[in-house]
Image 1 (spheres, rainbow, N blue to C red):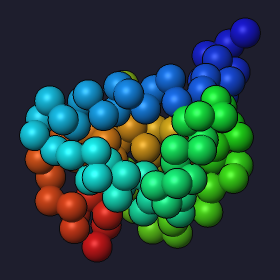
Image 2: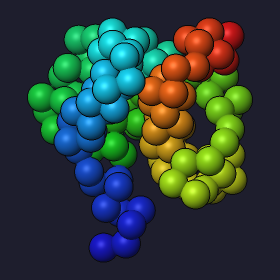
Image 3: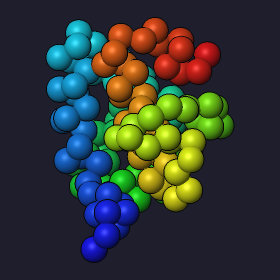
Length: 116
């Protein structure tokens, strides 16, 4: 199984606690994390919780998402890769989420994170 497949099959719920830890360690809240996830995917708190409980894979998670049209404005480097240059759509969406979580943890203003 290559890296792409591994990420595709990884349950969103297995990574979610790491997102929470990352933002809380930097003084941000789970509510702010959910605001970012909702902005990107269109999922409300209940939908996020259902995906976590169901063990939804990242591939299924993003297939069900109503991706924000402004998500294309997310640029920068995650794990040494420029997100805007990732050709695989699911992997790019996963990295969009990673980038938003990074920005939240770095204390960036919510308005800027949400490309407002």
